[in-house]
Image 1 (spheres, helix red, strand yellow):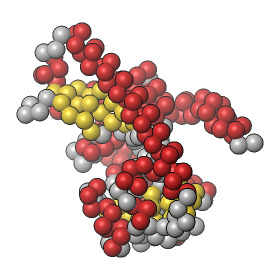
Image 2 (cartoon, rainbow, N blue to C red):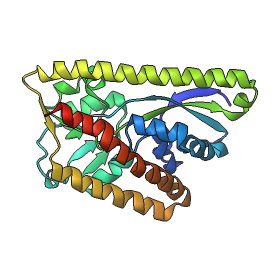
Image 3 (spheres, rainbow, N blue to C red):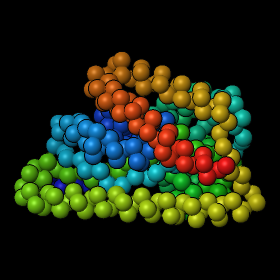
Length: 271
């Protein structure tokens, strides 16, 4: 109760609450659109509140990064063999999958990422997207910039409020906070999309940078290893399994609609 509210992302608490990661982002999971649909209309937010209740916290969605990039590398990734032994700054479930693939995940604070990559302490790092990555100077420390961000397809942010402080607010003020958070969510997502497209254009103009897509075989294997990782955690943790099952049920249903809407339209644009 020292602080009545804060802004963060659920995967920061994965060490204490592993299932919280489903309300943030999971490898090969839902994008921002799918997350919004699940949280606001598919029962996701109710589950989120249930997970946070024992900690006297009320969560409210407040922002999303959109699909992130796959990271900066000092060598080309042409097969999963190129990942083996690779030291990469990649946290959370993405890090667990990377380790299962034979990589060596490293945890670093944001302030340490550039120096570690520039000095060779790590061979690769993920951060966010073109805009934030350039602000950190990662384009000066590595040559190969990979996409897509399989590990974080749409990272949700949260407004956390102390439940006792929240209960003291009259209903109309609670509604005002929820409405303001929804507006901020839209603003954050718009900022991410705008600045990333501009920064990507600038990155492509730099002769020392290669923007590359992960080979299909690499993504297929990472997706398989992701399922293994999630299934293993679910077998050990009933709370994790409950959220995993609910998340998967909705995401499988949403995937069909996404395929016929966004994916089909993007495919048509490329014809």
